[in-house]
Amino acid sequence: MEGRHGRNSTLREVRVSSFPFLDLQAQFAEIREEIRASIERVLDSQAFILGPEVKALEQELRGYLQCRFAIACASGSDAILLALMALDLRPGDEVITTPFTFVATAGSIARLGARPVFADIDPDTFNLDPRRIETIISPRTRAVLPVHLFGLPAEMNAIMKVAAHHNLAVIEDAAQAIGARYNNTPVGNLGTFGCFSFFPSKNLGGAGDGGLITTNDEGQNTRLRILRVHGSRTKYCYEELGINSRLDALQAAILRVKLRYLERWTMARQVNAGRYRNLFQEHNLDELISLPKVPASCNHVFNQFVIRSRSRDQLRQHLADAGIPSEVYYPKPLHLQPAFAWLNHSEGDFPEAEAASREVLALPIFPELKEEQQLAVVEAIARFYRSTA
Ligand SMILES: *Cc1c(COP(=O)(O)O)cnc(C)c1O
Image 1 (cartoon, rainbow, N blue to C red):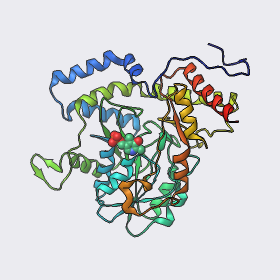
Image 2 (image 1 turned 90 degrees about the vertical axis):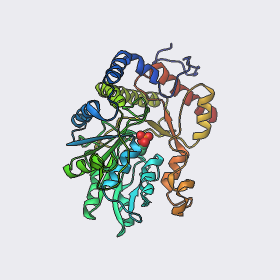
Image 3 (image 1 turned 180 degrees about the horizontal axis):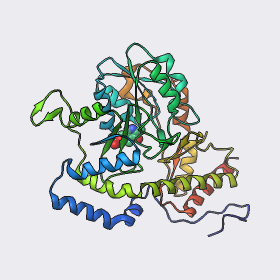
Image 4 (image 1 turned 180 degrees about the vertical axis):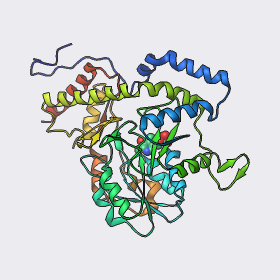
């Protein structure tokens, strides 16, 4: 392959065999034997629900995330739901969150009969803009639910300040941001609760669904452990109604193996992000598209590497034609989704979220991504802008 430097000015097609947006096969190849052994260990034990594997994973994650308590559950969506249940969220209560996120963020609020109250995003970070929170606080507001979108921590100082001033809880949706740090503190450890997901495409992904809630509050730790087993503190005695949301021992065993690799994988994602930056600069594309911005307070773990382009849809088609995978997170903000029509929003209500939905494009950033694959991505984008110039 042609070297990165000294290539001639006519861009020729870089030949790479097609590759996926996220290569979980490559990851598995590296750890196959350890994963197999962990599965076998659980099968031999025939203990499938909670138990020692889940306990050990919770312990290990407490250390990794530097928090006092970690409670595993069945999914990231349930983690948010359980955190909101632990706050005794009632029908009619309001929770302030972002419209530019995965559906579960606001969906968990709505499932409890409460109302998601959206605040627009900061277009530079795609995260909840803390300057827009104060004016929408009402007597029914109970909590703020920022999302560390794509792996970039939200502006937590400003969010915590306004929340403290109005006596609101803060739930961090850290589903995409395990291991990210804000002013050197791991996310999930800044608000009242942190919610994580082990969905396979997250930075720490299981072989199915899984989730985790973190807290530093001992009372809430006890409460969450009751809520995840139907509300029972002692067997067949229900002081309140909870849900069935436990992590499987099989998932825990697999996640314990993968947790040992997480820092390495995260660093690889960050190296890839840096390499994209250099390549975009070398190809003079950094003026035509906008690259992820990382505030000095933040350590970004790049669950996604998301660029913005005014001609996103054409660019995406061009990439697809060239065999380059890409994704759009998210094509429609939540306030315009039919499931939230009852909130009576219309187009124009959150212009930054709407613009982001039109312009964002996620490029492959998985740890095993190769340098020549990144070059192929960037050169395909360069060809697109040459053809439209
Ligand atoms: C993945 C995700 C969730 C939900 O996690 P699941 O484990 O899939 O239920 C919630 N919020 C955000 C921002 C996510 O990306």
